[in-house]
Image 1 (spheres, one colour):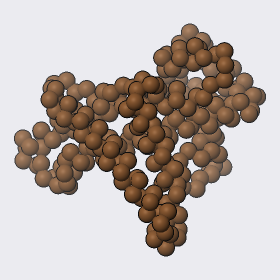
Image 2 (tube, one colour):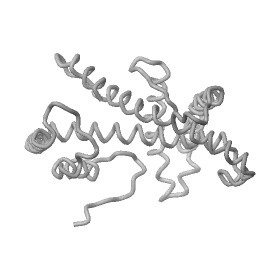
Image 3 (tube, helix red, strand yellow):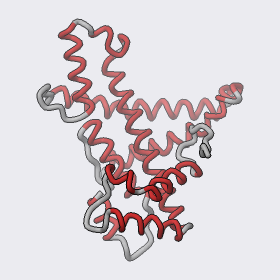
Image 4 (cartoon, one colour):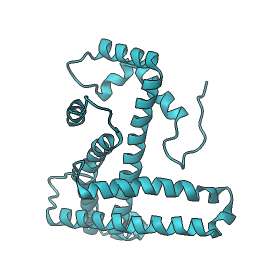
Length: 230
């Protein structure tokens, strides 16, 4: 977070696109938890990943109609989108495979660094206990790890980034709501430290604002219909 704020402070003299700043910040949090990997904004691999994730969301939006109109799966545009999704998935899985192999070479069961290490430990324990065939219901272990990484990375990064972008947009469009959130943050937390998860129960206006933005905005093209309960 501090790194993100420092980058934004350096760009205060002119209008900027927040998307790449949020993208690298969110991806570094997710990637660090999953596989101890960090990116920079100009990292070619990060730029390619970001491109594929955005493209994937657009492609999923194009083929989502098959859920309601199955006949659309036979249209050329559907087949083309489906093929591109498969190609992107294969390219991303090559990177995940490299990460897993690197983790295997440096694995220490007494020092678990991230989610990949955790799964490697579970595989070792399953082998020791003779329950290896029960792990992942007997499916290919490496492929399952890659699929989990892919799901958490792409879904986690894109949804959080898009939520933040919607929040910024609505804060600009609704200055009174922005003022109320800022006053609550100043009153409860102040400006000497960053907010923490434990503060959430003392920030009802801030939390309700975030939830309302998530309700009225479109985070991903695959979401179900939703509305407030009251």
